[in-house]
Length: 415
Image 1: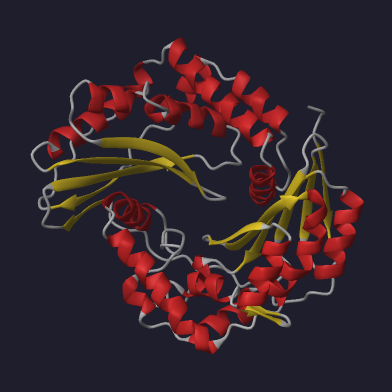
Image 2: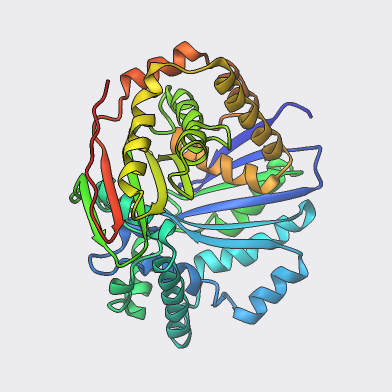
């Protein structure tokens, strides 16, 4: 493939456009990040942003919900909406020629949503059903609850809201949320595929150039949850969640942090899988991931096991976290690199993945990492470099949460 061409443009209203031209594909995709995510949900109204995300697609501009769907289907647009902590996301992918035709439709959704009151209750019921399903899914529930305890509020609150708060939210709350936070000033639009930068820039200017909105308020930080907690649940299983500090995506040590976590939990050859699940049969599921906000990061670990083996599972998992600094095999690092390079190849072939990545990169870095830059950073990783990171970022401040009939003891010492 040809070298990546990535260009950016900031419009007069503050909207940032990031475009990656990919001449070897026939498709194109966009990812639009608009401010108004869950961190802006009012107290006791967690879920407002989630309701707004759904309600915005129930009619916009001069079209009702059915007409919007029909026009997007006629253009072959595969689209989705999502709610994050800071942004609401609107994405679409299709043949490259159809993207400029789809932008006015999404311009209506983002700038002129109807937010119909007669659709509010159906939307609310849909979100409630989704939240109820999460309550019944132990893996999802414990990771949601773990985030609430390891991040400072509001960065740890659930993006989808809570059932308790959902009852408090009115359609006026949702409309006010849109009016107060939707603005081009912090919005980012990533476009990737067989597109011409000047043509896309002109199309975006036509659709969004005269969009204006309020300045975003400062986000007020609250408290962080307890380091040790237990949620009692009558069950034959125990869910274990562990979190500890890591570096954010924009930190120079990010790829060393990623490699360290990948050694722990990067496939069926990883330490947590082989040592805790395969060799000792302590749990039916175990994994760890690197989670990042703009200014801070966490390693989030999960294990699901029986009540009888829960304490042993927690002890064994903590032991693997502690012994990571004892040494890493060259074969372990090479497996991490191979997985990363496979992921890069798949990104290179997916315009939707690239559109999302370049928008995310610009938010975190105020620039975009090319795939070649990422490949070089991965190739440059050495055992010494990864261990240097591990030794300087020991998991000495653990957040441990359990869900099950009995609490567990945390027996952990950093070597």
